[in-house]
Length: 449
Image (cartoon, rainbow, N blue to C red; front, side, top):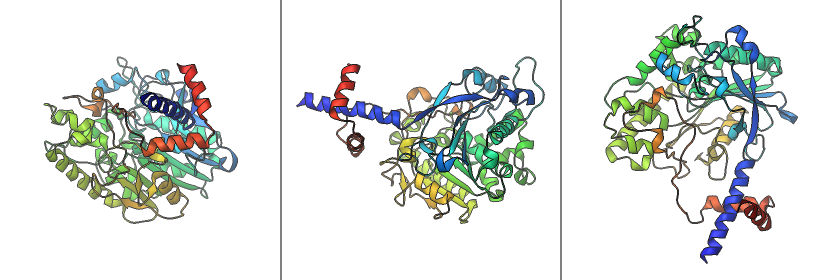
């Protein structure tokens, strides 16, 4: 009996691996060499880059430009730390990356955007593409040129056909989600007047909230980012004309002045914000929040109360969007960060839902104006469809302030030997429907073993 069960699980494992392969396509890197002459370079002076999967069929004139996330660097020390990795140098970037979720090129995984021109702009400036400092320190040789990178990449894409766009979206996750907010109206101005152009921010609605010690840690941090990168002149004037530039890094102070339609996908208990805004390492030197931040199931009642308070602040901050149909939102109660570029949270049989609607359906319906979507989830732990993040202990430890280090897009899972779940039954059913027979699975197993 045990041998049968093990064989069943091995078959399902192989099938799951085959599904994972089919759930994502790999897209090669494009280096924008001519950007160097314009001073549009990464922190280390290398040229910027993006990955471009060309549209086809009815989507040939539709464009989705997604900006990569990865936190920020707020001073010379933290920016130097990025200079030797992919977040500060195109020399360190992978030659190809997987496109999944909203970037997927298969209709069954991404029915409304699969055949668009899909671009992933790599992040190597540390300022959400807002930096613009002409001088280069002769000692550190750091370049703060994020705004120039944005302009150079846009010029390159316009020349490759985006100037003829009929539909277009600027999107991004985390720091990339903030990029789509800060550059929303600027992106719209680049495209044909008659085109449908909208903005999508995933996990980019960072709020100006106090930490557990009552300090304005994140406001101070963003202030340092703005000063280090010379970001003030690149931030929306509709905000900087009224407020200090450091506040214009927070969407709550500028979204009401954005004229281009915009949609926010965000967790009310955003895991990055809980780890770095509510309970950053500097506010928790003894590490009382360490276990809680790794897994929300480990949080004490008092910690959960503080997290509920953070949700209340988040909802208050996002009410400035109002009820206009041009501004949409999908605010779930998950402990998550970035949900549009992961297949499991974008569109799958067990993806997060609000009002029986997946993120993929909500965004597409809003974009194509089939119906508005403006939903806020009930408080944690009410939503059984959530995919709550469980982090590897190495990603966070007592006293570490991950704000300065950026974010990780990879989630860790606890290893166990579960019973057959609905997800596994779905995998089994899809394998059968795709004709992945038991014989094929057996042959693959023989090759592996």
